[in-house]
Amino acid sequence: MQPLRQLRETLQSLADRDHCIFAASDLASAVPECGQLSVLLSRATKAGFLRRVCKGVYLYPVRDYPAGHLLFHAAARLRAAEFNYISLETVLSDAGIIPQLPINWISLMSSGRSHVVDCGDFGHIEFVHTAQRPEEVSAELTYDPDRHLWRASVKQALRDMRATRRSMELVDKEALYELV
Image (tube, rainbow, N blue to C red; front, side, top):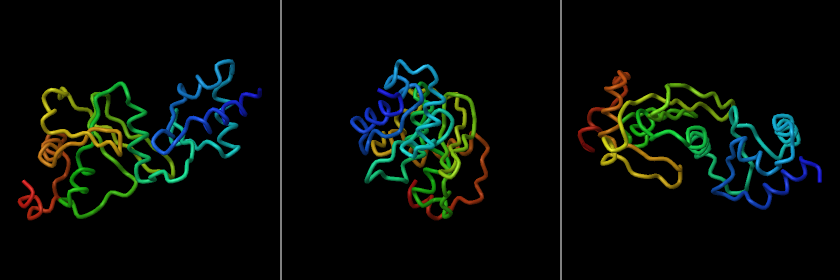
């Protein structure tokens, strides 16, 4: 069987609403005898049954996929081996403490290095390094099953904002006092 066809059939049988973001290494196991994985992925992208989100991460489009979760799912896939959690402006915006909603930009704290990942038309993922250990912040984190990531409390997000010297100008003080 042709590797492109084999990849397509494997994805059709395995992908669903909750599992449609794949790392290149995941896709390599679908076609183990393929010698040029990058060429195969390029062909799959050109054929339209895979969409490249960012380097090494691909979306297999499925029906009813929550498009607003794409960047979060890609972030979880990109840094699966690191300690990551949603924080900073993303959490404060969701809580209504920052009145402006960052469009197509998410911010996460990460035990890995700081880096902004350009996801083209999908947006940007900002990883901000933290030296905090999971046990130090675990009381302020809850798991968000829809986004496949840990999420900081408002209190922790504010701590992270101060620790990373982010601008606090957009923070709505009245909304903050109501929540905290």
